Image (cartoon, rainbow, N blue to C red; front, side, top):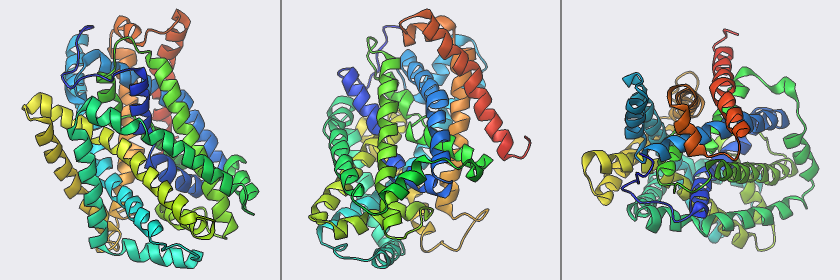
Length: 452
């Protein structure tokens, strides 16, 4: 198995993999989701827990998921089948591959809708819709936009088609080429926006909110959300990391690549917070305003800054591209499985997967308007799908990946794939992935369930 290669191809270099995996990690999860859930959970205390989850849980499990993909060189479903047989383990472990692909598929269904919002805001910036607008004007514009199912369906469709077109071009021609200039561009724009945020009157209040911890604000649910966000933003447990690992050349250091990816991903999340919260406090908005936070705060800045229409347009274009770099990783596991297991061409697999995710996305579209009054456990359907995937399926998938890589796979196989520089580093990773990660995830689940 050591010389086996994926039939889909390989990344051209370690830089190609790092960019692609960073693209998968950096996206709406950092710029749209992180600020609003941090705002809902007390700011600084949530950030500390989130960073701890990335370092102690996210990175070791991301390494485990990557090595599993590279060991098998197949899609996540067949990877678990192959590795289970190789380890002589219980055949039920193969369902872990299915859970990852399903989680990624469900996330893509609503991810496309939210990315459609960003796509629409490119046009709104370009046409001057935010020029001189007050916070009340921006809120009215946003509320009327999400209340229109036809507008949401149009932009959802446009984004899903773009995702399918990129994935249809393959690993090198589509996945890798699409992120080579998108991710650096996003960093440049975020730094420019940070410069603007530093000139606002609410900058230090926003800085204090984001970095000054108030642990009285934390609950068991907050900790679970921090862990779920770490998994969501690193693309853990949704099949994306595993399938990208399947395309990773043998000579690339998994540990080094994951360290760079997690660092870049965390930096983007913190930059997003440092940009958004000063604007929130400058304009007397609420930091816990939920999923619409980024669409009701940044437009205020763009509408009242010099050349804001240009910077705003470029920002939302970059945000769409970052979302695309994540969405292609979400659909790739299902596409790879259809190609490898059903004998479809890549184009056929893209159409089938994309259409299914598009149809599922209509549930999210209607949850903001037609079905907005329909709630389960006090959550609309979008919030329910997001909670189930981000806070239940991804941590559960990460827990199972840690157990599988740490306890089920042969030690020699994991050691060979990681190829860490010394024995002590491997022992540390193995201890963390066998004991620390599973215990941490399990204890949080127990706390939320009211057991501990």
